[in-house]
Image (cartoon, one colour):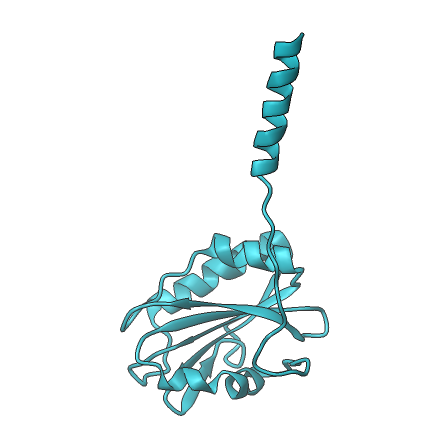
Length: 155
């Protein structure tokens, strides 16, 4: 009987080791709530991406009035940045986002989306549909210009 109780205690310990805790803090870019109404709003807040020498991929997580709850940033190399959809949607679910905006820079200065940009956007949109999290836009910042998938009706 004592051996059985010891096994139950070990199982509970294993269960508690599987728990995950994540803490999300509001965007540090401003002390006020940032409401997104168009691609220009995003570019205005993240214009420092145009000066980066390597690719950065940012995901903005929004609530129902389109205020930024938080964001995550992935850093890549000179001409690419690897992004894992599972991580994007894990963060979205944990912070209670109902929508996301994808944003990245092209250090080359060319704001035209690559075939890889188009493919990853389609894949993330498809995954978001399954989870009820809408991809509102994918914006590419390059130099002083930007390209918005939503503005061109590609999302």
